Image 1 (cartoon, helix red, strand yellow):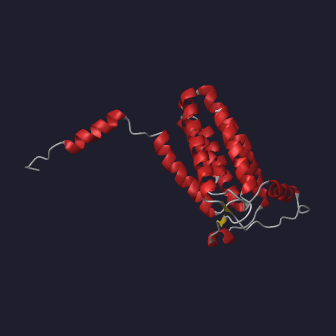
Image 2 (cartoon, one colour):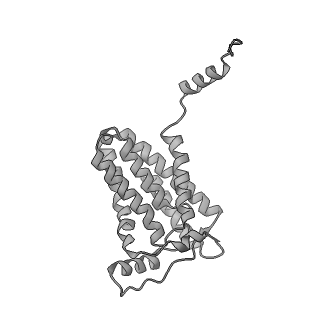
Image 3 (spheres, helix red, strand yellow):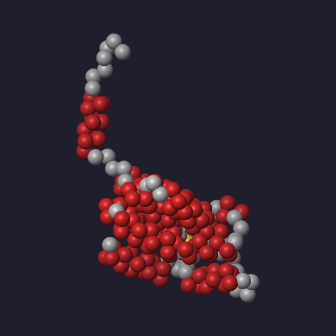
Length: 212
């Protein structure tokens, strides 16, 4: 897991320093209708707590669910790097928040200075939030904990919304992350086992009764 994390961070940093111009702009009309709300910096930054804390909770109680969650996360994260490598992308609709307005606007202004507007499709903020929420709801020890599942869902949705209200991501980035999560979920959490495959083959090969 540490090796995958190191490789991801190295690759991401290379992209951040090399994708600086000539990239594809991700922008649709709906992006312009979504207002900029600096207060969403709170759930956006909470992502940096939500993901590691969620994984730690799952690992502490259910090792099998933890490794599945890591497989889910790293699969999507590396797919994202491949997309950004061969289809360099970014946004062009960031506003100019006034740092003097309030502490939230000041933090957003700092975020804009330190984080580029490139390598946004699909949104890893969204994808990883979905992945951690799935991990918490699928782990056997947390399945019946309604409070935890509800709190996790609220955190997940808030983080996803924050990426758009802070103008960090386009609606396209968010939907791309959701679709990627849907596809990877089937591979990691609902794989077709050998027994299921053989059962399907027998069902398809079963002769049809002429009297039917």
